[in-house]
Length: 148
Image (cartoon, rainbow, N blue to C red):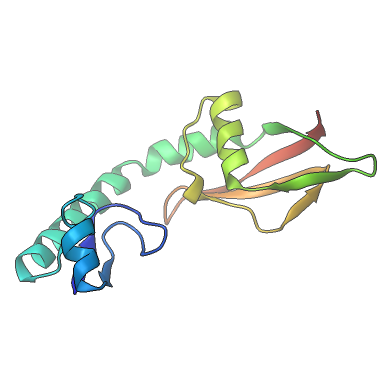
């Protein structure tokens, strides 16, 4: 059974993806919970309209994204971590911690999916992450790991 996802689902895919699932899973769980709709011709046409509308709304926000990136270009986030005596941290830093730091320190609510950490961070120090706010707008944010 082919369904169109209405929300991001970790195991299946992202919003607006057309995925193939078992009949019972689609009929008894995804569709009744409002997580997906059947991928038939009318719903596919609605999907195309919906994707076009959301893309237009996102394109309107390009200037806002540029202003946001300009405002954080010279700022450095401080993220407190627990670490050993050698500077190695317990665990690692992911885009979730960076999104939380942006929210707490700069009052910016940037979804974690738009934050990309290129390397695995395991030690105290200064690093950078990439913010992919739009296809045309991306930039770096500096952050520093400090011992708690």
